[in-house]
Image (cartoon, rainbow, N blue to C red; front, side, top):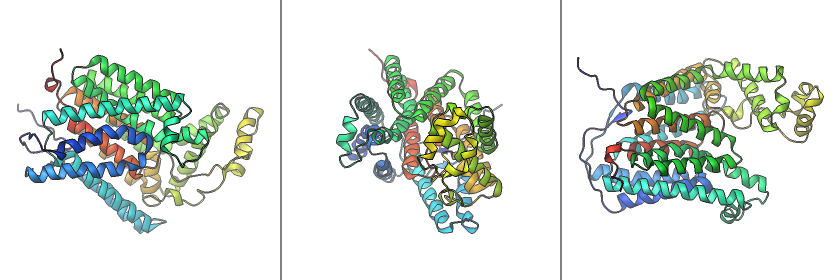
Length: 439
């Protein structure tokens, strides 16, 4: 019986590998070296880095007359359906202009991802080797700089951000975005080390990253790094079945998140676990409660793409609304904190990808997003080597954790970080047999 080929995300036709020339090699190498440090100190510049990387990709594609790839039509249909639903949501959105603008931005990012994922021919062995070395060096450099900041009163960050506010707590939190991007890049960096036969280097980089991220103020980044590495190791050990399990869990979460988070928040109050949490975590529970209540009001199509920041009641200060819930002595600390600070019911976004999709696009958007995740990770299961499969799975797992605990789903810097991480996996992670022999 013939073996049926499973299509990748966007398949390239077979093309010779070219050596490349001049700037089409050195510009990506320089960008890869700068990426981790730029993510740490200027994460909002990542969209610009994506645009810079598009130039050599387009140049190489045009110069070598590379044919456009054959797409995996189910993935394309799910992605187009999601973006199309976002655009159509302007018809019922509470802010139609914002929904149209957000849909146009998502469509633009989809085109950018297609160029970086598929148009450029596979890099030459020299180009891939230089790119891998540059990324690993930049990654280790970013960890060293972050370690210096965490142990020397944020000296590097204060030097970089000359005009920033001087309070240390604000400086510490300003490293969080960079910490999450470093967590996102951890799997491809480890895969690049392993595919080159550098087990000790991979282990050292992994432990250093976990130690530095763990010392930061971003619990989300630490959780993402751990989940990503666990997924990496599990897929490297068991392969396809683990990826399918991971894909199923992610898709199920996108569908069931409102019910699970609503029940979890109610259970935390009922079991009196809330007094044991930090105020920021209690605020997160309250945001999720408010969001699930609004989802229940428009469960099928939602309130419109990118409407989270304009949901009625979202700017309400929770101090008065939850005063009666602080009804015992063990709530005294939280009561004081909430009384002296502003905690909005929904500040900008729900801090959860799944809830934001449900809130803005309803069950229809959640089903399309779940289908897209299932199909994309199914394509990752067809990657050419175990390092490649493991790296894609680790990146997806880390990104999914971050997306469901922090940041707005459509923020440009975050979409750029995701695209860059996937592009690195597709362009640089090679078969172990392609690695240079160790001496």
